[in-house]
Image (cartoon, rainbow, N blue to C red; front, side):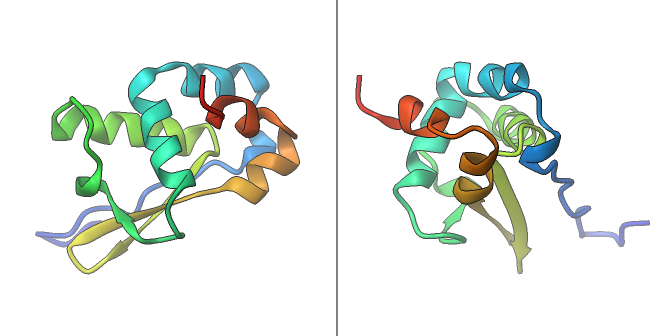
Length: 107
């Protein structure tokens, strides 16, 4: 049970458990791709959810992060009132070598 005023810890899927089509679907959305690109340029655990400049509200942003967690791309943890993020680059690259390099390069 979650105490009043506290949210449940996010659930994470390890990249080893993600089918390639699920990974591609997660990366196909422009908002999620923007989140991944920004995380790729940031140090681990330095970006809170509210620090991203994306054209969606809080509920939609939460959904996008849930999709990225389910695809094994993002890990989140709570630090006080903030939820911070890291791109699971090493783990994802081990599962899908070269995929992130392809989607992160400039068009």
